[in-house]
Length: 174
Image (cartoon, rainbow, N blue to C red; front, side, top):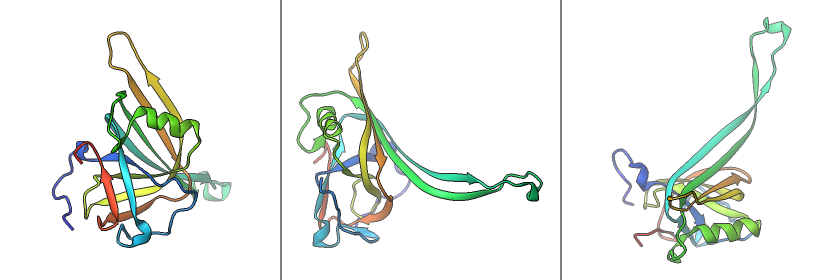
């Protein structure tokens, strides 16, 4: 495995959408792509100018008079989301998910498998199932038309190492 070394440039990391749209995905361990059941292809969100992975933990306030009013918390559930903003281009290749593809997935309420990664063999990835909960297109005067998409996690987010034996990450360079 040829893992990326040194500091990772932000241009190398992106939101990838799996071609698998089944309702149930196989359980995957610490490595993604090392067994045949994980045969998968991920497509980069096309023409993205930015991307974000966000993880949060629900906090339950357990402050009482017994602790003299000092804040005390209990941990709750974890939530996660990914988002991307980019430029609209209608003639993107089939190796990436363009704005039109994302619109179709949003209107169909399709459950997706997402990954936040470089897509390089040996690198880490965060992945999980999600729905598109927000899709927006903008076209201002004398500007390039753009889109914004938000994916909300449906279940847990998992960290794994990429093994390109049975998984493929497609982007504009492939």
